[in-house]
Amino acid sequence: MTQQAIWKITKGQSPIVTAAIHDGHQVREEVSENLALTEAERLREEDPFTGLWTEIAETRIIGLHSRFEVDLNRPREKAVYIKPADAWGLQVWKEPPDAGPIGRSLAAYDTFYTEVQTVLADVTRDFKHFVVFDLHSYNHRRDGVGLPPADPAGNPEVNIGTGTGIDEKWCPLIRRFIEDLRNFDFLGRHLDVRENVKFRGGQFSRWVHESFPNSGCALAIEFKKFFMDEWTGEPDRANIYAIQQALKSTLPGVLTELDKLREIC
Image (cartoon, rainbow, N blue to C red; front, side, top):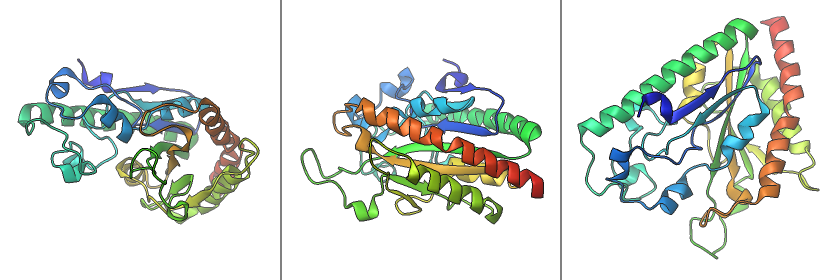
C-alpha cells in the first residue's frame, strides 16, 4: 500500500478548502494485526460522515485511514498512539508497536503534510487568502448507552475552535461565519454554535496558521454527535444532510469577507 492511499485530495478553484482528516476507518494490515480495539471501538472515536460535509467545496481533503493508525491532527511526536493515556484510556495495541510500523505511519504523516503544503500554496497563489473548514465531530455520551449525555452547557452542538494562532485580521470573517451558522434554519430551529468552549483546535489548524501566517485561516469546526448514535454508529440522515446545508449556507458570507480582506491586505 502506498502512502498516498491514506488520504484523498480533490483540487478545485476556490479560496475555501474543506478537510475531514478523521473521517477514515481503514487501517493497513500490519496495524490491523496488532490492534486490540474492535472496529466499533475505533469508529466511536473517529469522525464518520464528516467526509460528506466536505462536498460543499471544490477543494477537499479527506482522511481515508483511521486515526488509530496515525492521527493527522496531532503533533508528529504524538501522532501514533502508544499508551492508553494517548487515546482516551483505550488499550490500542495487543503488543507495543515496534519502530517499523511506527516509522511507516509517520512517513505517511509527513507525506500528507507535504502534499497539503503544495495544495495550499497553490490556493494562496491563485487567491491570496484562503479559509480551511477543518471538520470534526465529538462524543457527548461517554458515560454509556442509555445514560444521560454530557451537560450541554459545556458541550455546544457546534464548537468553533479558533485558539490555534489565528491573526486578528480574520476576526470579522470568523464572526460572520459563526453568525451565519447560528442563523441557519436547521430543521425548524437554530444550532447552538459557540467558540472555544469544548475545543480550541488541533494540530492541523495550528499547522495551517504556522505555515501560511499571512494567507490562511483554519476554522476547527467540531459537531457534537447529535447526528448519529455514537455507540452503534447508526446515522441520522436528516441531521447529517442538514449539517451539510448549514455549512453551505456560510459560504457566501465567507467569500464576501475574503473579498474585503483582499482589498485591505
